[in-house]
Image (tube, rainbow, N blue to C red):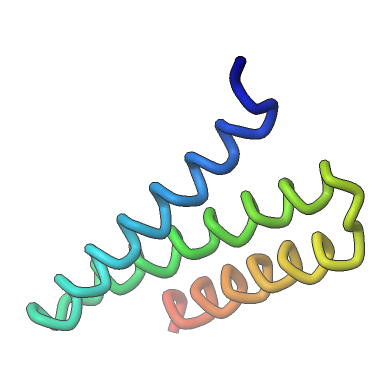
Length: 82
């Protein structure tokens, strides 16, 4: 039987792995688009972690993780506009 939160855990791990890959490529190539993609993948990972914490009744930690994701998203948008 599968764990009820397996899909969220999978999304979290896949997004972290892809963020590592895109971050490494961004360091080598110096590409702005790869850096932005890395940050968006980190946001996905933070939100998935927050959802997992929320579903396991750890609301204060979940709120902190989701707020971190929102703050990183706001920073990306501000940097992208400028």
